Structures are given as structure tokens and as C-alpha cells.
Length: 309
Image 1: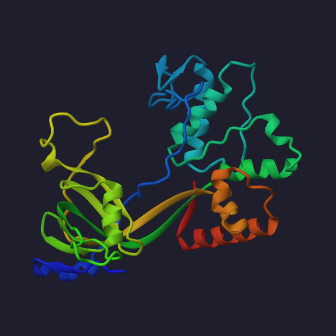
Image 2: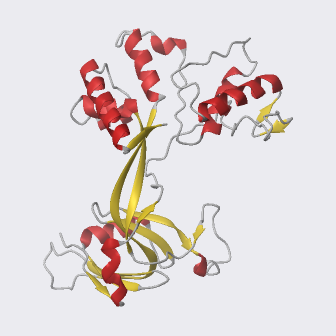
Image 3: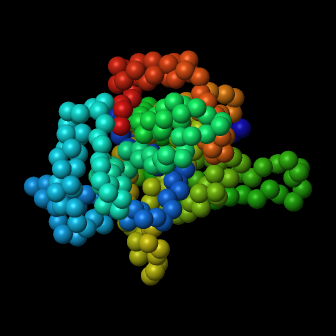
């Protein structure tokens, strides 16, 4: 596998390895499946700065007193005053109990897990009730894990892909060159077959601001550069414009992964456990596995590498 070799066009690029860490949020590959339902339109509790309920706001209507009470609880959760406790919302069917719970979860942020279960899910011949409840609780506990990695971040100037010659052997891969720039420098990288495939898969083109993880070769598109905002008259609603990166191309980035404890349990419970996340057939997980995971997460918290969401 050919590693991308770089030719610096400016001497300041030699200081890239000593660049200061840059904190950025990782762009997730896995898109959460969110079906349209009775509560999928709710974006929050619809409160103002004084915790007073607005008439119609963030998808919430009515139940002003209950929403205000939920807002007080929400503020206590953010301040860490009721950690490790549960909230019981009681009422007649159709009065908005689930809507308030969904509004609280949305107000806490996108990284806060929200798990909905029905009573029929607890009773099963394949899994005992304690295991089903434990899995539901651990689905609702998120862990934000931080790690530092070296990345290459810049605006794509040009992508050149050289096709194999007519007389080349059948196994010969494609080669190419990638030109990236920041506000201060511009660099040309030699590309191998895998990097070309990654660029093709992500549909990267000139004008995109991308990041390349040096350890894994993973490519993420952050958006289009503002300098290319007038290239097209019409663009899709998902088009995002960002500034051209400043400083060196190579940076140290703090990557943030947000996973639930249940996902970590499943992955560590068996060989190829990550496939069970998609199949849904997780089965019962041994208590020893959960204890080891809890110990490791506690160590990461003490070292500052992880925090509970």
C-alpha cells in the first residue's frame, strides 16, 4: 500500500508535526434511522429564558405547567444535581407524557440517547426480564470518548487520476495526485488505489474542504469553501459552506465518539459482535463483560478520556 508522500511548496510546512491540537467534532458515518411518528416533530420543551412555556414552540402545545416543571428538572440535570435518579411522569393516556420526555431528550442535545420501550418488550421467552431492563438502561447511557489523532485538513484544489496504460498488467492500480491548500500553504500528495477509491466514494471535488485521518486513511467532507459559493446557481438544501482552513495542513485533532454502553457491551460480548447491532439479535450479555466495561469506562473518566452523557 502506497502511503501518500507530500512535497511542500512552502518551508513552513516542516512545522506541521508540532501543530497545536485542534478540537473538532467527528462527522458520523452511521445515520440514525428516525421514522416519522407521533413525536418525531418535537425539538424541545418550548420554554423561554425564564422557563415559562410558550403557546406554540418547538412542536409543543399545551401542558404549560408540566413543561415548566420539566424545564426545572432539565436545568438540574445540566447542573448535575440529580445524577443517578429517575423521573416518573404519570397521567392519563394521551396527555403528553411521552411528548414531554421526548422534548427533554431533544433539549439535552443530539448526543443524549433516548430509548422507548413498551411493556410487551420486557416479556420474552428468549430473554429474562432483568436482562431486557438492563439493556434498556444501558442503551440510555451514552459515553463520550475522546482521542487525539493526526489529520490533514485543507481545501481541494485539484484531483488528478491517472488511468493505467493500455499495456499495463491486469493487477496494476490507478495512481493520482491530490492538491490541498490552506490560507497559508499548498501541498501536492501522491495517491494510491485505496485513497482514490475513498475520494470517489465520498464524491470529493475541487472546492470541497476535507479532512484525511493519517492513521486510517478515512476521508470526511466538511463542506464547500466560501470561495466556490458562486460556482452554481442552484444547490441542494444540505450544501454547507465553510471557511478555507488556516495554518498548516497537518494538525492534531481531538476526535469525539459518542456510543452507548449497550453498544460497547454487544461489541465485546462475542466475536463479530458489531453485526448484532444491525441484526438486533443481541441475546443475553454476561455480567462479567459488563463489569469489565464499567471498570474500563471508569478508568477513562479518571484519565479524562471519556465522560458520561
